[in-house]
Length: 254
Image (cartoon, rainbow, N blue to C red; front, top):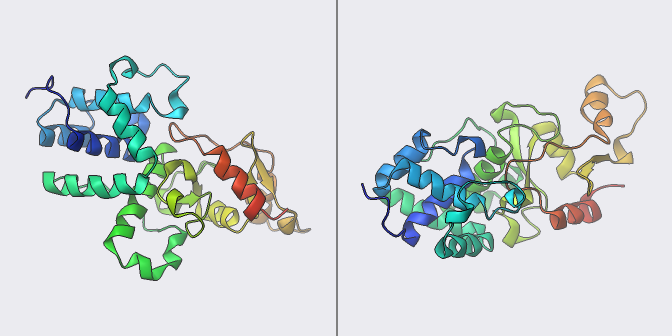
């Protein structure tokens, strides 16, 4: 296999997609998913892994980190990154077509729950929306290493990729991983209903609406006592400050 030949756009797209979907700490040449993609592309696993590190070097979360691959990132790598950062839905859809043509099956982590877009039953009937949902969920949860950012619960079946700006409010942000936070079912629902929010310093604020006397143990420990605690930040795709400001101003119940 020749790994020195110039990368084509149709090869960069699934590499970027895979970068988004797997935990950052698993981006290495022995990862079975990377090995599989490399075989289908006719490249070495090391070459695919390095290309994914190139993408990591563009991620704002990593700009202050020493990410191997930065010096090797090419103009086309940057162009592909910039293109899809402006339209994450198009990445999910374009990559799906390429992956299917290569005969690759995307590994799904245990997840029986969909996020709140389930309310839009009409849209869920379309394959397009399902692809976008899956991309967003996997990109967000893998960035947080499949843990709740609030309580560190690490049971994937109880985790949701919570939209910061709701699905129904801004179509351009529906698939953006930086518009998502990994939360367990309890904190996802509280966040969605405006009972908790995230401050500029990433500390949790709790609404007066749920500060009731004689709260049950779960109510007290799960909601009241988390006030002032800092959320666990992801390895990539850190939450967008503009989206968080929107949530504080438009959704949070003071």
